[in-house]
Image 1: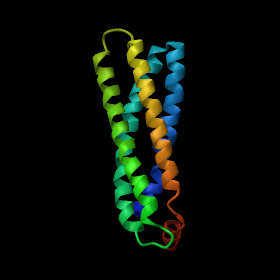
Image 2 (image 1 turned 30 degrees about the horizontal axis):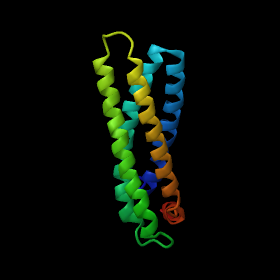
Image 3 (image 1 turned 90 degrees about the vertical axis):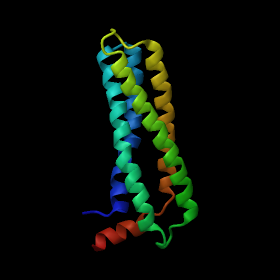
Amino acid sequence: MPDSAYLHLLINHIPVFGAGTVTLFFFYSILRKNEKMNKMCLISIVFLSLITIPVVISGNRAEGKVKGLEGITEENIEPHQDIAMKSFYLTETAGMLALIGLIAFRRKGPVPAWFLISMLVILIFVSGMIIYTAHLGGKISHSGIMEKQIKN
């Protein structure tokens, strides 16, 4: 079983690619006025918010594992951790809003355009925050973690 640092490296890419993909599909579905695709994108936002939970948990645990390893400094960990928490809260907010929208508009016909566009704007911010979080995480040296995992 991989340790928490290795697990974090494995799963942290899911929100990065997930947010970008959902943003593109959501933009397309709004342009095409495809109601089924709009709802699938809202469901995907809910799932994205759920997927970020184990990423944050594994990241918090990974910090304890990597502190003190050669080449890993607090000055690289802190900015990544700070923006990761902001990204997490924004992603969870987007997920809750998407779920509220799915419930509120389930029987009232198509989801209103104002709600879809608002969610798209939020999702664009979520994607940007997650990408920036990944960028800062990339500044943390991962070679020590990978070497440790290979030896085990």
